[in-house]
Image 1: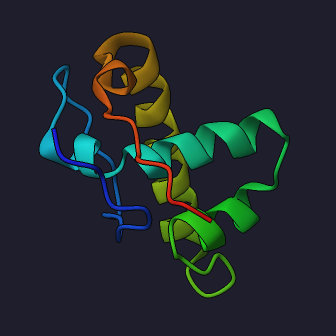
Image 2: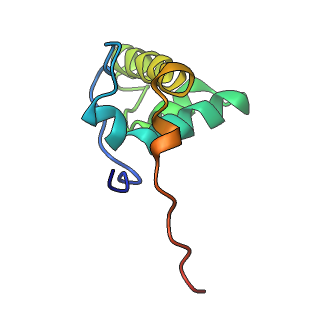
Length: 95
């Protein structure tokens, strides 16, 4: 598995099937950001804007649907998909 991009564009809806997809692999960092934000009690609108790149003021329905579907998928991936166990470690850059 290659390193996932740090800030990929997202689809309007995350995958829903019972198998991991290439989309899941590409969006593992997005999933981590969503789970972390939820754990910290962040407002979904801020998360949609920052992690999903969708403005909830201009596109409230799209933003909410994308947020909810990606958060649900993030939970599925960590609970059932086992994607995070396969994620390669990033190399530390020298400072």
